Image (cartoon, rainbow, N blue to C red):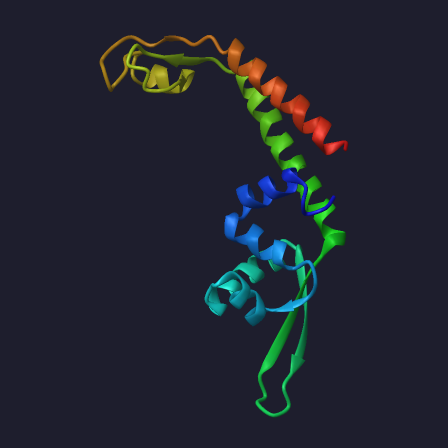
Length: 165
């Protein structure tokens, strides 16, 4: 998958941030962190932080060399195109697993809500308050979660389709 892929762009933005996407997009060819900082008009320390975050996800790598005059190390950063597919698959697998767990909970559990629509609560939480909402003193009634189940099933279907591409 290429970086122009909107799926990859949205996943990097969602999981890391917009700035991370901007940095990785500049690495169409290997560059030093200072070059990236100038190109993006960011402080070098900010760019290094973003690069280190991307490195932790295995999306970029670097070659380190030592300047013999100054003794300082310089880093040449490059995109790890070979690891991007693995990152996408892992992200989609994690999202799919989370949705599957949510679906199981919705199918197996019973939830309640009240008229003030303060959100849904579990059976255990409703029992603790004798089925009375602490926010409005209204009675909790059982929630109909058919719509939520349908949405989760749809999400799971989409994630499976994306993962299998």
